[in-house]
Image (cartoon, rainbow, N blue to C red):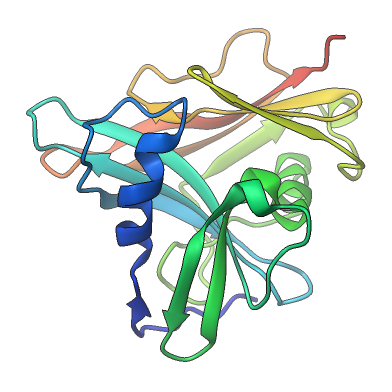
Length: 214
């Protein structure tokens, strides 16, 4: 069970994302973003070592809301081999230095995302300890979800992020809108709500599962 500490982080996650987001190929917002937290959920690491969060960040300054999904992991030490996924480091008021990663590069997040699609993990509220988030829905064709990720590749482009496993591909939808919904060909999906700064709650597909094509 992940414990949510209501304490300080210096710099904050949003401050780190403000400088990290514009360098991503899927980013569709302003050159100098001022992101706000627009929703999301968490997953528990069974080992209790890694924080896992799917955060939606929004920027409404230009009158046309732009929202992006950023799956993140929080670690107490650097993750070997994931240097390209490092968002930055932050000083946590309780836990000390935290290494914050784009979670698509982290095996713990990928493993728990597959568990969520299989129905073996329970989505948790973003800001509350030990509180399931019943608004998050996840479903998949059981045979299509690998038991573990094995080795995978990560590819980022304007369409989002693809995590390619041996027999399945996870598509992380990065730029979110109300029309971000699972394609008919998808074998599974994770759908959740988010709220623009000046709007009502919107539900979008955060992740879809597809067969891997070679």
